[in-house]
Structure formats: structure tokens, C-alpha cells
Amino acid sequence: MWKKGIKIIVIITVIFSIVTAISIENWSKTAHGQLPSKTAVVLHAINNNLVSLNTNIEAPEFLSPDSSSKNQMKKHNIMIPVEENKKIPVRIYHYSNTDNAPVIMYYHGGAFLEGYGNLETHDSLIRSLAAKTGAVVVSPGYRLAPEHIFPTAVEDSYKALQWAYENAEKYGGNPDKIAVAGDSAGGNLAAVTALKSRNLDGPKLFAQVLYYPLTTFRDVEFDSRSMYDRGYYLLSKQVMLKARNSYTPEEEMWQNPYSSPLYADDLSGLPPAYIITAQFDPLRDEGELYGKKLHNSGVTVKTTRYNGVMHGFVSFYEVMSSGNQALQESAQFLEKVENDTIDTTENYDVSVKKGPRGFKRFKEEAEAFAIGAFLVGKSMIKLFIK
Image 1 (cartoon, rainbow, N blue to C red):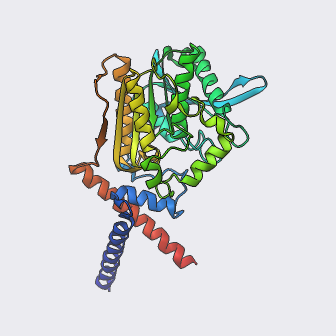
Image 2 (image 1 turned 135 degrees about the vertical axis):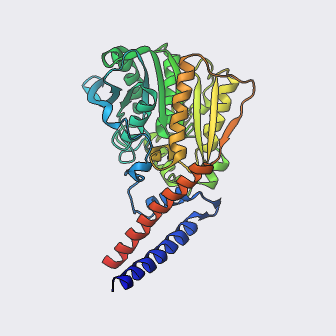
Image 3 (image 1 turned 90 degrees about the vertical axis):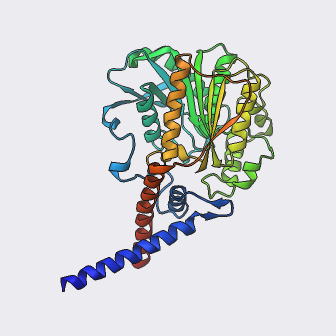
């Protein structure tokens, strides 16, 4: 009897494995070519509401990178003044033994809109960046549209930088070594804060790290905007228009360099920049063009495009090796700039990172299958419940 039971279990397991493999293969097929398995399962999970976009998709614990440092990190939630009778939340990450460490101002993404991104949705990403750099990371919860339109987020971001400069030493940070960083809308704010600090003779920044930044609100024909704007890759034309109409409701706002730094008249004198873009991302081309314009203005720039991934991929660093690699290379870039060992080149180019190879590729495929099996099982359970 027990042998029959084992046979049934084996048959069910084989069938389930075949269904999972076929499902992942189908999820990988898109109008723009074959996606890597890991990218496909993450996108399928989010686009089919099997997990929330604001929920971390975690790999099995023994496969998950950067887990050893989580319990060692200190986190403070405070409120800081930005104008008379107005305060915003700020979250500070640092190690207990931090002393004279660099400071990173991190501006979270989320289309400048309420309900799309905040300190909670980006907590894991920012914590990981703090762990990989050993820096004191200060992340402000700037005010969001539609209640607060441009330039409120810009003013909040700059006020937070000034606050960090004045208070960094309380948390073991060095006020003379501050960098800015951010993703998507936050990448825009990081770039703009660097520009504003230069213009107003504010805190001198030593670097900027921009993850797939939005660099212009103008109507510009970029190939990436037209190719990947349907929302399958986590950012749609609809959301971009909603962000523009809510955050910059007047067309003259689109021309302002503090909303569209890509068309600032002067980009010289800005800190060295590391710009990361994704292959399947509407914002890819404008991020890379911003890097070129920085380079042409005499700014040291490193631009890296990660192939096989989508907008927001760094936030999935726990399951996507490209995201974890991007964070690691960000930390290395910041260290080199801080130590004045960064290479400079005469020509501007975009370095393209391909997917993992060898054992890392095997690991990615194994994780993709494990996550895919979970998603297939979850879908089956939902089907039976109905």
C-alpha cells in the first residue's frame, strides 16, 4: 500500500514540476524577446497580483544574500523641520560602532505619488545599501503629490540634506563626506538635490548614485519610453502621465531644471555619478543620456545597463542577483570616489552587464523554479477555492 502511495506522490511531483517548467517558459516569452527565468517569475507574480508590488519576494533563506547583517543595523525614526510648522519623517540607518563614516542621503522612488512608494516600501533596499557601504544612511519621507506639488519634494529633499550636514556627527557620520542616492523618482530627486546644492553653495557632495532615474518631464521621444511603456515591466505610460499631471501640473514646471535635470543649462561641477539602468525600462534611455551630458560637462560618470531586468530591479535584490550586484557595485563606486581612486575616461560609454553565468546561473534557475513552483501552487489553490 505504501509503495502505491509513493508512486502517486512521485507522479504528482513530476506532473507538477512539468507544469511549473512549462509555466515559467510561457511567462518568459514577451514581445521583446525571451526574459531570464528569474525576471519572468518576478514579473508574473506582480502583474498577476500573486504578490504585492510593495511586498518583498524572498528567496529560500539559505540562498538569500546579505542576510547576516540585518540584526546588527540600528534604525532611528525621527521628524525634522522643513518649513514653519511643517515636519517630515526621516529614517536613519547605521551600525552601533559607526564613527566618521560617509553619509548617504537616500531618496525613495514611487512616482512622486502618495501610495506608490515610501520609507516602508524601500526599507529593505536602503538597509542593504547601508550594510554594504557601512555608511550612515539618511532617508527622508518627502511630501508627495497630489497634495504637494513641485517643488515641495525638491525643497524637502534639500532641507533634509542640510539637516544631515548639521546632524551627521550625532550618528557617527562625517558631514564632509555626503553622497546622494535614489531610485526612479528618488533618482530624480538625488540628481536635483546635487544640482541645487551646487547652485546654492550648500553641502559639498562627494558622489551621486542614481538607479534608473527619471530625468525629464518633457515630451521627448525615447525608444525605451515607447517600447516598454505598457506597464508589464512595472512602469507604465499611464503612471508616468499620472505622476507628471499630479506632481508637475503646469507645463512650465516641466522645463525647470529641478524637475528635468536632463535639460539643465549647466551640469559642470557636480559630484561623480554612478547611473544604473535596466534593459526593460521606459526610463533607460533618459538615464543613459543624462550620464552622457554629465560626462560632456566634465563630470566623472560610470553608467551601467543591466540586461534581462526591469524597472525597479534593485528593490528585488534578495531574489535577483543583478539587483544585489548593482548594490554591491554602488558600494564599490562610493568607496573608490571617497578614496579618490575612481578611473576617469575620455569617452563616455554604457557598460552592459549580462546575466549570471556558471554556478550563479544555475543558482538563478533553481531559485526561479522554486519561486515559480510556489506561484503555480498558489494559483492552483486559488482556483480550487473558487
